Amino acid sequence: MRRWCLAMLALMCASAAQAAGGALPASVSQGGLIVGKLPGLAHATVGGKPVRVGADGILVFGAGRDDQGPLLVNLAYRDGRRETVRIAVAPRDWPTERVNGVPPKTVNPPPDLAARIRREQAEVAAARNRDDDREDFLAGFAWPVHGRISGRFGSQRIYNGDPKAPHPGMDIAVPQGTPVQAPADGIVTFARPGLYLTGGTVLLDHGYGLSSSFLHLSRLDVKAGQRVHRGEVLGAAGMTGRATGPHVHWGINWFGVRLDPLLLPGIAKP
Ligand code: ZN
Image (cartoon, rainbow, N blue to C red):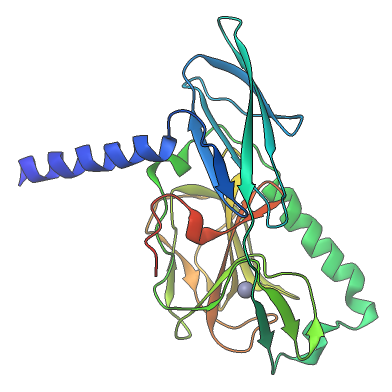
């Protein structure tokens, strides 16, 4: 038994090291995440903006849905070496998704609610701007619930016939009340029921600006500031906010950049 556990541990460490990568890849898909490990790295910028570099040379960044690339990465090493890496961004075809039967007041909210919606979105954006040195993302990610994908990342959304912004995450259809589990370790940075568009909303910070969001929850089991581990229950699936049926919307952000959960290291393809 003990030997088996050690073997599993070695396997898990191997996959974590793989997720950490070695050199940076030559290309990334739109909506894709890059986790690099460059020993001796002291400082890095992506697109001219400084990014966190761990003592172990870990750095993290992503390509947005509409990023045309190449991503320009400037690297400075402790021994004085400097290098510029160009990472091509592979374009994707984005499907159109028609969502009908949405409560009309959530598609075009009444004007007197605009201030409330703006305030809620600003609070969520602030939670996503944390830059924490925890490396919780290194162990890879797991699905927060298991079910049919009812909405894909990046699709052009048409609600009740009205074109809206692209879908910023992945929808997984599950029965009302299904427990939603943390896909990786993290710190809860936001947990509130009743947001106008997203209903019961939980944000989980995995470190280095990478965060998960879980929307439309019917119940919250965690509080802001709480440390959670992978597999821990965050709340229950529901259909609060702009939703037509019970599902979990899982979003992944690198700061303000939306990424595709299906492209995360460790995520089993459906
Ligand atoms: Zn969604």
